Image (cartoon, rainbow, N blue to C red; front, side, top):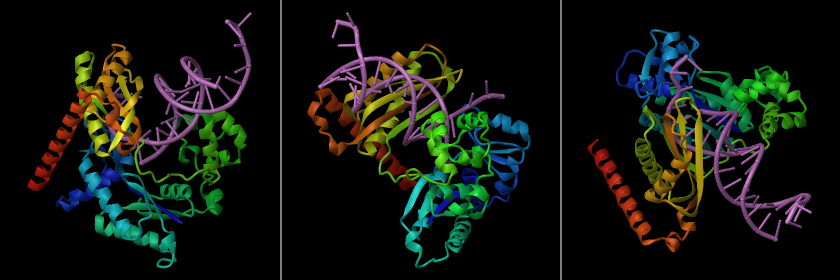
Length: 386
DNA sequence: TCTGGGGTCCTAGGACCC
DNA sequence: TCTGGGGTCCTAGGACCC
């Protein structure tokens, strides 16, 4: 038996709760409001919206300027990722008082396997309400809980009633509760897939469930098969697997101005490389593949990647490769955003890094080590001061 | 319409090997 | 060599999630 727990308008709720704690009178959740990226820094999209804002037709992911056009007295607050991390951790810690069988799916969502709690809490729905109420009381925000014997159905269920709700959805309910929903509501059916499905007359989850699976797979490929199973309330494989380590680590950045000077782009790439490689070293991993990506002013993206013969965690080694990749990649157009990602990661322990290492590489590793330590100290000092 | 950032997985085509 | 086909690895691009 699973719960899927989803924070309602997470970033906005967390901001609202924090402001109330700090003595502010107005609850952001009661007025048209959004958490939005900074327009000046060209990150101006809606990250979260209040229910009153939703009533104006404001959607997550749309440009903030459009949202303001829809609702001129919209309250726009900036994002605050430290607060989100803190709020997220507090919520997951609260769940851990019940069980450790928690699969974190994102910053504001998780699955809880409650099979160990049967003895203490034979009534699953009552437990769902208890947890929901405890979050509200202790942390000041609401969640939607989905209850089912399967992860997929628990996830679909938590989406059905919002905010502050518990929804039960078993296999035997899907015809009644799920099949009438538009195809877009099915997990893993996004814009492209729904467009293609509608083109062949599949408009609801029920339409997909009743279609021939082989035909759908032929038409859409692997995603078609997966979606067909989901429409029928089945998972071909577990919805999410607990994984110890990430498979890739990357950072990207929208530049304050479009750039078409190589040296300016390289400064940005170096800064991204430093960030990404520091994260990689912190995870005690080495990367075999390095990829550079950019987005031009027309929002086209281009990427190049390379596989190294010797995996590395060294900033300068990665930067050398990134520089080469960028030179192959860049068409001389105006660059809006740049990203760097490493993948094909292996544990440091699994590799005798020193085996093929040159004197220069050895020195560079030392530099990385020292820089990481200094940054650690800076953080410690700052937290002591706070 | 003037569009973020962090991820995962799939697909198609080419290189290379046997 | 004018050649078949399977397996594997790699890359670029795209779809999806939050």
